[in-house]
Amino acid sequence: MKKLRDRAVALLDEGTVSLVIGYEEGTKRPRPLFCRNSETARKLIFDSRCFHNLAVYVTKKELVGKERFAVTAPISTLRSILQLYVENQLSEDKLLVLTVDTSGELREFVTFDEISAYVAQFEMKRGEREQEILAKIEGMTREERWKFWMAEMSHCFKCYACRSACPLCYCTKCVVEINRPQWINPWPSPLSNMEWHVNRAMHMVGRCTACGACGDACPVGIPIDLITRKMMEDLAPEFGYIPGQPAKQGNALSSWKLDDREQFIR
Amino acid sequence: MSSSTDFEPKIIAFVCNWCTYAGADLTGTSRLKYATNVKIVRFPCTGRIDFLLLLKSFAQGADGVIVSGCHPNDCHYTSGNFHARRRWIAFRTVLDLMGVDIRRIQYSWVSAAEGSKWADLVNNTVADIRALGPYTEYQKVADYLEKEGFDEEA
Image 1 (cartoon, one colour):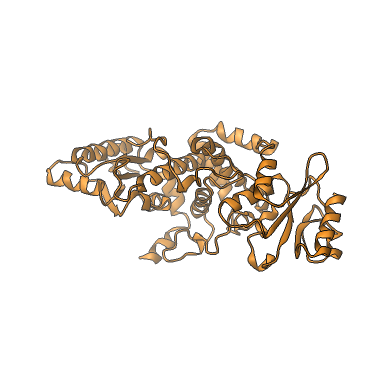
Image 2 (spheres, chains in turn purple, brown; image 1 turned 90 degrees about the horizontal axis):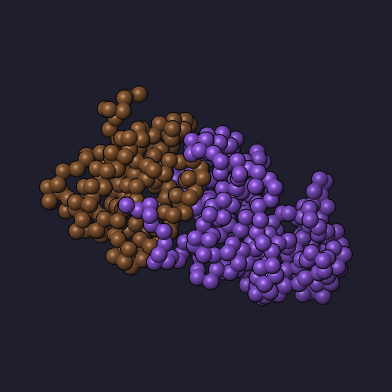
């Protein structure tokens, strides 16, 4: 952690980067910190409590500007960064990625290949919470699932925090802002809430890296991250991609295979 | 609620212009009789059929949906139906997770020469949906706080 802080201070002092995005101590838990000078960078921390997906900021042009910048990233953020790279949202000459590996050593990545090789060592696993809720959902009948999600969706008040927290929701104009036609009604109601979440999941096909930022951002605690996670778990083996790893055969929905499953087509 | 014997399912069919629409046309010109419960919406390609349209059909009172286009390798635009097939696989996965009744969405390939297949498809789907009954589960939710929005678009 100290090494990372020192490195960030050095990078800013040298002028290699103009901005370091990292974490600082918050009132209850760590919060994002944007360092434009070494003074601020001394407040940087990095430990297992740092879960905010800072990759959400790297596509914000008004924030990162035209200069090179650095971001501190745990594994889940690294996966998001790789996915953004696959979607041509990032370039290597603008970004420097800092992380601390399991042995406490500072790692600095300049190229996306390095990140990809590093991330490949880590297996994607369900956490305790995810396993518990998903096991419950998997054990339900269809009617029970409908009731479960309708009850959950009735809490949603369409704050779109899930959208803001997601590093891959970077469209400048979202489908819910389009009102000719109005695809999804803007007021919160169980149906339009469900439509929004189905829509969000569909836009995440082959892209979601299951970082859990959406579920964590939800102010009413709907486990929305599990919709995209479950979908990702079901579809990744079938479509032959590894979430958070560069797609070798193109993105899931912009490519196809001749032998894709079609038993459901009569 | 009407009893299941006099329930007439409302079915919306999203079909592609080049194969299934022409196929349905052939059904008519061949004077084959089929169930009248289906309302056909013509699209340039199955790749153009947005998944939200399917949800919107249910919200507006459809009991079942048919989605049909060219057979694989027959697409007028070469690969539209392959892309569509992928999207349907993903869509079915998401809907099943959410608890939407995916038996009510019938996917099919019907070519321009398969007039009789179209008649069979509609008849079989109508029979299936009739057995499932009206989709009140979805429509009950759709009627709640949603009606106003649909009138605005008219």
